[in-house]
Image (cartoon, rainbow, N blue to C red; front, side):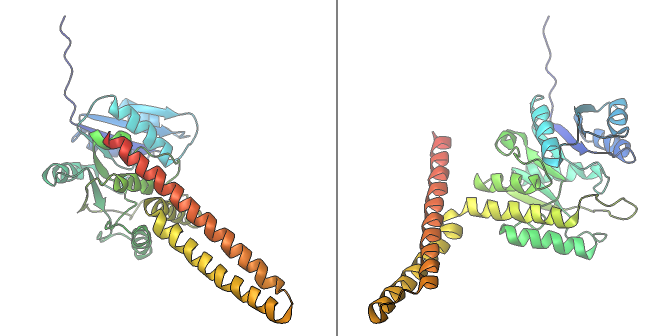
Length: 296
Protein backbone atom coordinates (compact mmCIF):
# COMPACT_ATOMS: atom_id res chain seq x y z
CA UNK A 1 0.00 0.00 0.00
CA UNK A 2 1.33 3.41 -0.98
CA UNK A 3 0.98 6.07 1.71
CA UNK A 4 -0.06 9.51 0.55
CA UNK A 5 1.24 12.49 2.48
CA UNK A 6 -1.08 15.46 2.30
CA UNK A 7 0.48 18.75 1.27
CA UNK A 8 0.04 21.31 4.02
CA UNK A 9 0.60 24.93 3.09
CA UNK A 10 -0.97 26.98 5.89
CA UNK A 11 -1.36 26.02 9.54
CA UNK A 12 -3.14 28.53 11.77
CA UNK A 13 -2.26 28.52 15.47
CA UNK A 14 -4.61 30.01 18.06
CA UNK A 15 -3.55 30.46 21.70
CA UNK A 16 -6.68 30.58 23.86
CA UNK A 17 -7.56 31.01 27.51
CA UNK A 18 -11.24 31.17 28.53
CA UNK A 19 -12.40 32.34 25.10
CA UNK A 20 -15.59 30.27 24.75
CA UNK A 21 -17.53 33.34 23.56
CA UNK A 22 -15.37 33.92 20.49
CA UNK A 23 -13.38 30.74 19.79
CA UNK A 24 -16.04 29.26 17.47
CA UNK A 25 -16.08 32.27 15.14
CA UNK A 26 -12.28 32.42 15.06
CA UNK A 27 -11.88 28.69 14.32
CA UNK A 28 -14.62 28.59 11.65
CA UNK A 29 -13.21 31.61 9.79
CA UNK A 30 -9.61 30.39 10.13
CA UNK A 31 -10.55 27.01 8.65
CA UNK A 32 -11.66 28.75 5.44
CA UNK A 33 -8.11 29.98 4.85
CA UNK A 34 -5.98 27.21 6.41
CA UNK A 35 -5.23 23.56 5.80
CA UNK A 36 -5.03 22.89 9.53
CA UNK A 37 -6.17 24.89 12.57
CA UNK A 38 -4.52 24.21 15.92
CA UNK A 39 -5.81 25.65 19.19
CA UNK A 40 -3.83 25.68 22.43
CA UNK A 41 -6.32 25.51 25.29
CA UNK A 42 -4.06 27.13 27.88
CA UNK A 43 -5.70 25.79 31.04
CA UNK A 44 -9.14 27.25 30.31
CA UNK A 45 -11.82 26.74 32.96
CA UNK A 46 -14.63 27.10 30.41
CA UNK A 47 -15.54 25.22 27.21
CA UNK A 48 -12.92 26.80 24.95
CA UNK A 49 -11.13 23.55 24.14
CA UNK A 50 -14.33 21.51 23.81
CA UNK A 51 -15.84 23.96 21.31
CA UNK A 52 -12.65 24.12 19.23
CA UNK A 53 -12.40 20.33 19.09
CA UNK A 54 -16.07 19.91 18.13
CA UNK A 55 -15.47 22.26 15.21
CA UNK A 56 -12.61 20.13 13.91
CA UNK A 57 -9.61 22.04 15.22
CA UNK A 58 -6.66 20.14 16.63
CA UNK A 59 -6.48 21.01 20.33
CA UNK A 60 -3.30 21.06 22.40
CA UNK A 61 -4.28 21.24 26.05
CA UNK A 62 -2.36 22.65 29.01
CA UNK A 63 -3.56 21.33 32.35
CA UNK A 64 -3.05 24.78 33.88
CA UNK A 65 -2.70 28.31 32.56
CA UNK A 66 0.94 28.67 31.55
CA UNK A 67 0.87 31.94 29.61
CA UNK A 68 0.95 33.26 26.06
CA UNK A 69 4.57 32.32 25.38
CA UNK A 70 4.07 28.77 26.62
CA UNK A 71 0.98 28.44 24.41
CA UNK A 72 2.91 29.63 21.35
CA UNK A 73 5.71 27.20 22.14
CA UNK A 74 3.28 24.27 22.20
CA UNK A 75 1.53 25.49 19.05
CA UNK A 76 4.74 25.94 17.06
CA UNK A 77 6.03 22.50 17.98
CA UNK A 78 2.72 20.91 17.03
CA UNK A 79 2.49 22.87 13.77
CA UNK A 80 5.99 21.88 12.66
CA UNK A 81 4.93 18.24 12.89
CA UNK A 82 2.74 18.81 9.80
CA UNK A 83 5.64 20.22 7.76
CA UNK A 84 3.75 23.32 6.56
CA UNK A 85 5.05 26.15 4.39
CA UNK A 86 3.45 28.93 6.44
CA UNK A 87 2.36 29.21 10.06
CA UNK A 88 -0.18 31.84 11.10
CA UNK A 89 -0.74 33.00 14.69
CA UNK A 90 -3.91 34.81 15.69
CA UNK A 91 -5.51 35.50 19.07
CA UNK A 92 -8.82 33.88 20.02
CA UNK A 93 -10.58 37.08 21.13
CA UNK A 94 -11.70 38.11 17.62
CA UNK A 95 -9.93 41.45 17.82
CA UNK A 96 -8.30 40.39 14.56
CA UNK A 97 -10.51 38.75 11.95
CA UNK A 98 -9.11 35.51 10.46
CA UNK A 99 -10.57 36.49 7.08
CA UNK A 100 -7.40 38.58 6.64
CA UNK A 101 -5.14 35.51 6.77
CA UNK A 102 -4.80 35.57 2.94
CA UNK A 103 -3.54 39.16 3.17
CA UNK A 104 -0.65 38.05 5.38
CA UNK A 105 0.06 34.97 3.26
CA UNK A 106 0.15 37.08 0.10
CA UNK A 107 2.55 39.59 1.69
CA UNK A 108 4.81 36.77 2.91
CA UNK A 109 5.05 35.34 -0.61
CA UNK A 110 5.20 38.54 -2.65
CA UNK A 111 7.63 40.35 -0.34
CA UNK A 112 9.72 37.18 0.10
CA UNK A 113 9.53 37.89 3.81
CA UNK A 114 10.24 35.61 6.74
CA UNK A 115 7.64 37.23 9.02
CA UNK A 116 4.59 39.36 8.26
CA UNK A 117 2.94 41.34 11.07
CA UNK A 118 -0.62 42.66 10.97
CA UNK A 119 -0.09 46.19 12.24
CA UNK A 120 -2.72 47.70 14.56
CA UNK A 121 -1.23 51.18 14.77
CA UNK A 122 -3.37 52.59 11.95
CA UNK A 123 -6.56 50.86 13.04
CA UNK A 124 -9.46 53.31 13.43
CA UNK A 125 -10.85 51.48 16.47
CA UNK A 126 -7.62 51.21 18.41
CA UNK A 127 -7.91 53.38 21.56
CA UNK A 128 -5.42 56.24 21.74
CA UNK A 129 -3.80 54.96 24.94
CA UNK A 130 -3.26 51.53 23.36
CA UNK A 131 -1.86 53.09 20.22
CA UNK A 132 0.52 55.17 22.32
CA UNK A 133 1.63 52.09 24.29
CA UNK A 134 2.30 50.13 21.11
CA UNK A 135 4.29 53.02 19.61
CA UNK A 136 6.26 53.42 22.85
CA UNK A 137 7.20 49.74 22.97
CA UNK A 138 8.22 49.85 19.30
CA UNK A 139 10.33 52.97 19.88
CA UNK A 140 12.12 51.46 22.87
CA UNK A 141 12.83 48.30 20.91
CA UNK A 142 14.72 50.33 18.33
CA UNK A 143 13.53 48.33 15.32
CA UNK A 144 11.64 49.66 12.30
CA UNK A 145 8.46 47.87 13.32
CA UNK A 146 5.37 49.91 14.18
CA UNK A 147 3.55 47.17 16.12
CA UNK A 148 5.87 44.82 18.00
CA UNK A 149 3.04 43.32 20.04
CA UNK A 150 0.58 42.28 17.37
CA UNK A 151 -0.34 38.62 17.80
CA UNK A 152 -1.61 38.28 14.22
CA UNK A 153 1.41 37.17 12.23
CA UNK A 154 2.51 34.93 9.37
CA UNK A 155 5.77 33.01 9.63
CA UNK A 156 7.76 31.12 7.06
CA UNK A 157 7.73 27.67 8.66
CA UNK A 158 11.40 27.04 7.87
CA UNK A 159 12.50 29.72 10.37
CA UNK A 160 10.11 28.77 13.16
CA UNK A 161 12.44 26.46 15.06
CA UNK A 162 14.93 29.34 15.41
CA UNK A 163 12.48 31.78 16.99
CA UNK A 164 10.47 29.63 19.41
CA UNK A 165 10.06 31.74 22.58
CA UNK A 166 11.62 30.77 25.90
CA UNK A 167 9.53 33.08 28.09
CA UNK A 168 5.99 32.12 29.11
CA UNK A 169 4.31 35.53 29.29
CA UNK A 170 3.00 38.11 26.84
CA UNK A 171 6.54 39.37 26.28
CA UNK A 172 7.05 36.32 24.05
CA UNK A 173 5.91 38.43 21.08
CA UNK A 174 8.92 40.69 21.69
CA UNK A 175 11.32 37.79 22.20
CA UNK A 176 10.30 36.22 18.89
CA UNK A 177 11.04 39.44 17.02
CA UNK A 178 14.37 39.83 18.81
CA UNK A 179 15.41 36.34 17.75
CA UNK A 180 14.34 37.15 14.20
CA UNK A 181 16.29 40.42 14.17
CA UNK A 182 19.35 38.61 15.53
CA UNK A 183 19.28 36.35 12.48
CA UNK A 184 18.50 39.19 10.05
CA UNK A 185 15.17 37.72 9.01
CA UNK A 186 13.06 39.93 6.79
CA UNK A 187 10.07 41.36 8.69
CA UNK A 188 7.23 43.08 6.83
CA UNK A 189 4.11 44.83 8.17
CA UNK A 190 0.68 45.09 6.57
CA UNK A 191 -2.20 47.26 7.85
CA UNK A 192 -5.13 45.12 8.99
CA UNK A 193 -8.40 46.27 10.64
CA UNK A 194 -8.45 45.76 14.38
CA UNK A 195 -11.49 45.84 16.70
CA UNK A 196 -11.79 46.70 20.37
CA UNK A 197 -15.50 47.57 20.57
CA UNK A 198 -17.80 45.06 22.23
CA UNK A 199 -14.94 42.89 23.45
CA UNK A 200 -13.82 42.20 26.99
CA UNK A 201 -10.56 43.83 27.91
CA UNK A 202 -7.51 41.92 29.08
CA UNK A 203 -7.38 40.70 32.67
CA UNK A 204 -3.66 41.41 32.81
CA UNK A 205 -2.48 44.15 35.15
CA UNK A 206 -1.41 46.89 32.70
CA UNK A 207 1.49 48.02 34.92
CA UNK A 208 2.87 44.50 35.32
CA UNK A 209 2.31 43.81 31.63
CA UNK A 210 4.07 47.04 30.63
CA UNK A 211 6.97 46.34 32.98
CA UNK A 212 7.43 42.83 31.57
CA UNK A 213 7.35 44.07 27.99
CA UNK A 214 9.82 46.90 28.60
CA UNK A 215 12.13 44.57 30.55
CA UNK A 216 12.14 42.12 27.64
CA UNK A 217 12.82 44.92 25.15
CA UNK A 218 15.71 46.34 27.19
CA UNK A 219 17.16 42.86 27.69
CA UNK A 220 16.97 42.21 23.97
CA UNK A 221 18.65 45.50 23.09
CA UNK A 222 21.50 44.71 25.45
CA UNK A 223 21.91 41.25 23.92
CA UNK A 224 21.78 42.64 20.38
CA UNK A 225 24.34 45.41 21.07
CA UNK A 226 26.23 44.57 24.29
CA UNK A 227 29.23 46.75 23.51
CA UNK A 228 26.95 49.76 23.03
CA UNK A 229 24.58 49.29 25.96
CA UNK A 230 27.02 47.78 28.48
CA UNK A 231 30.51 48.51 27.18
CA UNK A 232 30.13 52.28 26.73
CA UNK A 233 28.49 52.87 30.15
CA UNK A 234 31.19 50.67 31.67
CA UNK A 235 33.89 52.78 30.04
CA UNK A 236 32.21 55.97 31.31
CA UNK A 237 32.13 54.52 34.83
CA UNK A 238 35.82 53.62 34.69
CA UNK A 239 36.90 57.02 33.33
CA UNK A 240 34.79 58.79 35.97
CA UNK A 241 36.21 56.48 38.65
CA UNK A 242 39.78 57.16 37.56
CA UNK A 243 39.19 60.90 37.62
CA UNK A 244 37.67 60.80 41.09
CA UNK A 245 40.43 58.44 42.20
CA UNK A 246 43.09 60.87 41.06
CA UNK A 247 41.32 63.62 43.00
CA UNK A 248 41.31 61.45 46.15
CA UNK A 249 45.04 60.74 45.76
CA UNK A 250 45.85 64.40 45.09
CA UNK A 251 43.83 65.55 48.11
CA UNK A 252 45.47 62.97 50.36
CA UNK A 253 48.92 64.12 49.16
CA UNK A 254 48.06 67.73 49.95
CA UNK A 255 46.28 67.50 53.32
CA UNK A 256 47.07 63.93 54.45
CA UNK A 257 43.37 63.23 54.83
CA UNK A 258 41.46 60.50 53.02
CA UNK A 259 38.14 61.53 51.47
CA UNK A 260 36.43 58.31 52.53
CA UNK A 261 33.08 58.95 50.84
CA UNK A 262 34.65 59.84 47.50
CA UNK A 263 37.03 56.89 47.77
CA UNK A 264 34.10 54.50 48.24
CA UNK A 265 32.27 56.00 45.26
CA UNK A 266 35.47 55.67 43.23
CA UNK A 267 35.75 51.98 44.08
CA UNK A 268 32.08 51.39 43.19
CA UNK A 269 32.50 53.17 39.84
CA UNK A 270 35.64 51.22 38.93
CA UNK A 271 34.24 47.84 39.95
CA UNK A 272 30.88 48.48 38.25
CA UNK A 273 32.59 49.71 35.09
CA UNK A 274 34.84 46.68 34.96
CA UNK A 275 31.91 44.30 35.47
CA UNK A 276 29.89 46.02 32.73
CA UNK A 277 32.77 45.80 30.26
CA UNK A 278 33.50 42.16 31.09
CA UNK A 279 29.81 41.30 30.73
CA UNK A 280 29.64 43.12 27.38
CA UNK A 281 32.68 41.24 26.09
CA UNK A 282 31.27 37.95 27.35
CA UNK A 283 27.89 38.45 25.62
CA UNK A 284 29.57 39.68 22.43
CA UNK A 285 31.87 36.64 22.35
CA UNK A 286 28.96 34.23 22.83
CA UNK A 287 27.04 35.97 20.03
CA UNK A 288 29.96 35.80 17.61
CA UNK A 289 30.59 32.15 18.46
CA UNK A 290 26.91 31.38 17.83
CA UNK A 291 27.10 33.12 14.44
CA UNK A 292 30.19 31.10 13.45
CA UNK A 293 28.48 27.90 14.56
CA UNK A 294 25.46 28.67 12.36
CA UNK A 295 27.72 29.34 9.36
CA UNK A 296 29.47 26.01 9.82
